Length: 407
Image 1 (cartoon, rainbow, N blue to C red):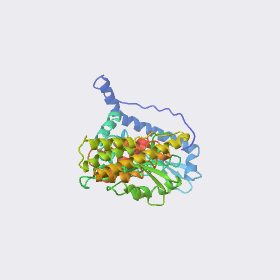
Image 2 (image 1 turned 120 degrees about the vertical axis):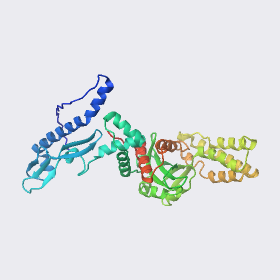
Image 3 (image 1 turned 120 degrees about the horizontal axis):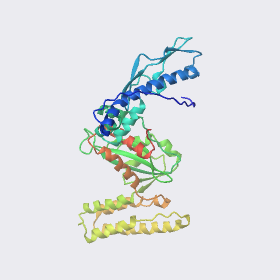
Image 4 (image 1 turned 90 degrees about the vertical axis):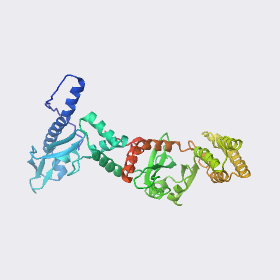
């Protein structure tokens, strides 16, 4: 509340009932007393700091009063607050403006809790982060192991949903203009066998790692517009941007045509997709044609990043040679009547090295694929409602990639 610091000594008397001398029994008894100990500590701190702030004029300054008097200095009325150690009952301290007679409650003000809130934000954050990192039942068990208090599953669920709705994502103007975009399926209730798709936009950092710029959950091939609508103005600050994708064209529809976008197709996904198109063309696996096409596309998509500015001409020559190779491969596919493979390679050709030619760090979506695996480690446990799945994904993304944490 201010820059002053105080050294306060509290003495709390604990009454424990032990049935044995084993460490396990002592820990069990101590955990059972934690709630009582914490309640006494909070009560002592409230009374001490309330008196201190009244005496030094801090309360008068905060509430705009020339003279503050006590309405209730000991707090004979109690109020309930949920903490990580369980429910505690603490004094409801109250002051009064001597001139106007206006009363002010102090307990939640001093504790930094919103008025009339039984569950403070710090408790919700602890429950929500635990519930996002593990299943709700596991989270409740972990909390009970270390605090002696087991929250209900609905408490954890509500905390996750509350925190998830508060979290927001944005583009970092100090980082690079290179983004990775991808989606992953989420099993949502009453949405059919496929469920819905979680869409994530990640911004590459200049050093290493990524920053999550946007998350949205919607139907397949839909919802990118809603994701980009919240950050379009932030993207414009970067000028032109480069987006690495696996070929999902619905991403471009979400951006519109007011932002200059350079698309770099993920080179790993291209080789992976060619296996599928060869199957559609009824090419026998490991046959001569199958081996030739796959070996050629693997060679084309394998390109070393040139970082030295003096080697820019070398990079351009390598790209030119590889484009010539893919043209020959397309012609070969057409000659062998591999229509699906030829059509796929023709669509890829224009965006094959557009980002690589600008020396981006890698031509694959490997970083955002790692994000998807991290989020799916929690999402794949059970079937979700729309809000619950989105909130869990947002909390995990913010914790692992955007620096969100609790003390």
